[in-house]
Length: 168
Image (cartoon, rainbow, N blue to C red; front, side, top):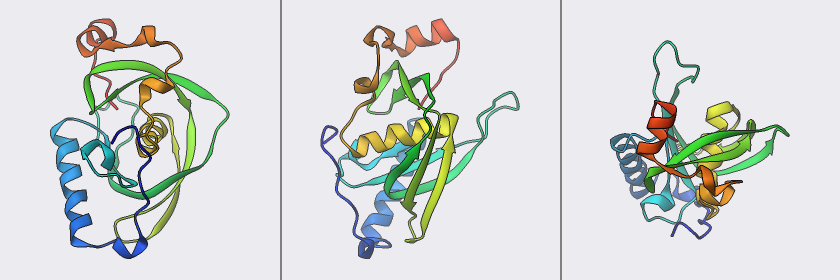
């Protein structure tokens, strides 16, 4: 399931009780596992559906919160030329981290759970999260985006080297 492109969700399905329950369960799973994003293929559904939520961090953190957000049929419209390296993890591979070059900014178009269209420019960590999750919808794993597999390490090794839990 993780290696296949997911199917679009028909606009007529938005608001369907089954879809709403899947969204609820995805938020539950993501929060329980300590993630900030989750794509439907990660929980066994080949649908173009992503949930994200970034909780408020300590006052020292530069990462702004994102309220619980549902992205149906998201697509990246454009990305900045600049790319930055950052460590990523994945709820599908919970104890592994690796360095991935991603675009600093990405403009994403999507429908929310009510069928309303949004076009949002995501920056920094938020852009990284959305690129990672949309990759899941396209059947691409973050390890395939890594320039150097030498940066792949266990969560324990990562925490020893960097002293904190950086999680995508």
